Length: 353
Image (cartoon, rainbow, N blue to C red):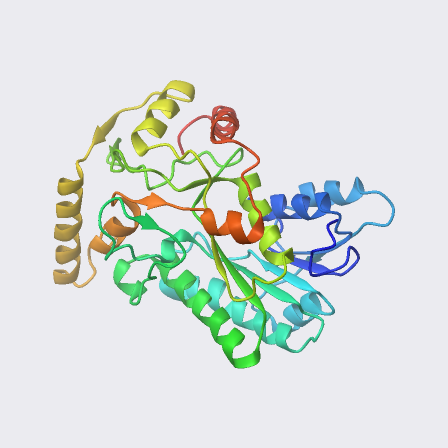
C-alpha cells in the first residue's frame, strides 16, 4: 500500500451499496491496494453471496464486515460510520420513476449518512458517487469538451428525470456539508458504466420503443467507463491526498461512437432492427414531446425533453485529464478488452435488455 494514501491499511473504510454493480468492484480494488478493514453496507434484501464468498477467501488479518441496514434509519447510519476513516457512498435509488422516491433513496439517505459522519472526528474523506446525468450541456457548442468545469442542471426537475433530479440534489447537499461543517469530500461522476453483468444498452445510444430500436446517438462519442476502471478511480479519489473538494469525471480512453458501438453489438451479441434518427429530427421530436406534455399537464410523461437531448444526444467530447493528473489514474482495462468482456456477458444473459 503506497505511503502517500491518507489512511493506514487497518483503518476502517465504509462502502455503501457494496453489493451493487460498481460497489463490488470498489471492494475488490480496495483489497488490491492493501486495505484490510472494510465495512460493507448492504440493504436487508440485497444478495450478498459474492461479498460473503470474497470475505471467506481473505487471508488472516483482513477484516470484512457485512452490515445489513437501511440508510433511511439514522441509527443504522450511526452504526455504519462509527470510527471509519473514509466513506465511499455508492448506494442510490436507480430504478425509481417518481421524484419523491428518488429523493428519499438518494438525498435523504445521503443526508442521514452525512449527519452521522460529522459526529465522528475519525472521518478523513467522504466520497460521493454521482453521475454524468447532472451536467446540463445546454450552453456547450457541438463537439465541445464536457469536463468537471461544466455547468450542472440548475432546474433538474425540468428534465423529467427523477434520477437526474436526485443526483443534482445529492451533490448539492454534500457540498453544503463541506462548506457548513468542514466535511472533507470528493465527488466522482461516472459516465456510462459498462461491463459483464450489465446487458442493457445505454440510452445515450438509443431507446427501444414500439418494437424498434431508435438510434439517437449517431456519430456521438459515448462516455463509457469500464466498471473496473471506474471502481479504481473511485478508490483513488478516496485515498489520494490533496484532492478534498474536487470533482472527478470517470470516463475511459478511446471512446467509440454510438454508431460504432451499435454495429459491434449487433455483430457480437444479437442482430435487431434499428432506425437512425438524425439529430435535427430527434431535437424537434423532443421539443414537440415536451410541449405536448406541458399542454396535457403531465398526462404524457416528460420522458423526452430538450434538456435530456442536450445531456444525452448532443454531439459532445469528453475528458479524463483531471483524474489522470491529480489522481494518477489510468484505465487499466482497454476499451477493446472492456467491450469484449461486455459483449460476452451480454451473450450469457441473452442479448438486449
